[in-house]
Image (cartoon, rainbow, N blue to C red):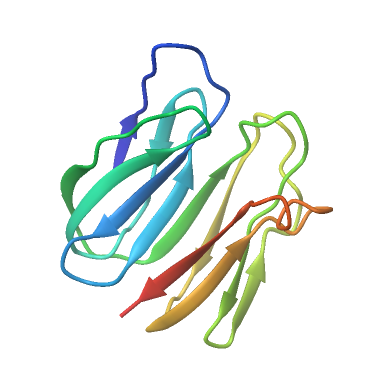
Length: 136
């Protein structure tokens, strides 16, 4: 699934949340140049919302197909970042921190349970670059 986030004024990046309407599952991806892409999201109906300081978002409903879980990490910031997922016996992160405007992927075989997704660079997690992913 992919799409574009638009706003009345320019922005660097925003978080796009895909929340299942029938299961307690939420996916989160970042925008790059206003565009986002979530690859191989679990099947079901979803509400899509955008979060960013100064933004207002209205949920949109979508349906996605089954497949392996591949996270596409696009660094739309001005500093290096990373992507780490921990939970249910999984502790995976990108091998190299993506520099600004770089994109990397991380494929993970998710099991049912709860996962912590963070940016393990410096104090980024403490500054709010984190979310929880629940898979059933």
